[in-house]
Length: 496
Image 1 (tube, rainbow, N blue to C red):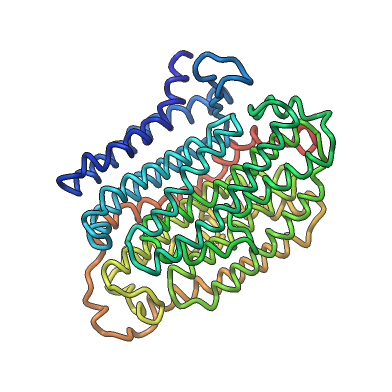
Image 2: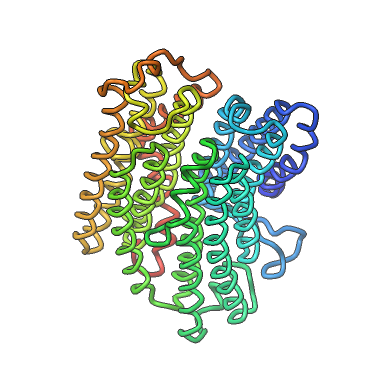
């Protein structure tokens, strides 16, 4: 058992130290920064996999840093929801590999070491957010990943990127203020910042301030998740950022809001300090609106990355709806969709980045016929497309099926209908994309002369596309892995 505490610390400290040293390593040659960042994330990935194996074998475990007992010490806690660290590391490694050629093409050379430093810092923030058992450190890690995220959107230095980053920053500030205010209220009510300790002390607190604290925290996390209508920062930030950054933002960063909501629910359900029926109803309706409105806006996009950005809003709606249903099947489906959507969206954004890298084009009109010139890249994008629609046996199917079952289980069949209606919308705009790539005549015949994506880009895309299929065929494995955590989460309200 003495092995695990150092590993819990290492999974956060290693990428932070790597980020700090990256500009020094890349001072004379930018490519060394890529090698250093890749080595850092590979080491972090090994640590994360060991931790996931440990929680799969023995259940959740924790470590209080510095030897100070709870609630005074800073607790690091690893449970089944913390297994998102494995996906964070996987996408981090693949994004760095993809970036080797991409960054040299898209960024000024002087900025490349700082790009990798920011990427490592962003990943470290997400890793810390996923394993902390302390509310204030939850906020600290959220700020680390947020500030690095704003900088990554603007890293190219282009005016349009800086404006997108500014919009992201403004909405991020709203989110941060709301979460910090809520943490302050919970500390005032309980005298503790440790999540488990707050839950145990909150039972006798007055209902009104608890409701305000939970409401503000939920608001902050929903802004981070970009749920409709709090999504206004997302389309520009995801569409304009460098494609590896778009993959991280869409696949991982928006999920921070979902992980935050899971931590909030752990406190709320354990303490029973407040009936969350009203909040759950709001989340169900916001989830349904996000599914439909995100898909609706995506239908009318010609810019490929903007279409993918609106698709993110739609799919976050599925996850939020599943949480709001508060039924076992719904929450299991939502939790697993956090993992699967990350893989699917990274496939699509990296694939789009490869198309832009080779052709210099980014609209469906200009990319017509590109499937004949870049068959492997477009095949991978097609796999990602059918996965996100939810066609079996891909990764998107089982999650959405469980959320639909959760809606029926919770006595809300209308929301199952909203899920199916949204899936039809999603099918329409992804069929548009696949049709343009394969069956529409090229607007510019020169597009048929472009070469396939370089190996450093193509391999990450193909790995992710393969996972879209594997996670569908072996879908019961992640479902059974996450089920114990959902059972513990819902047990206090009789939802397990």
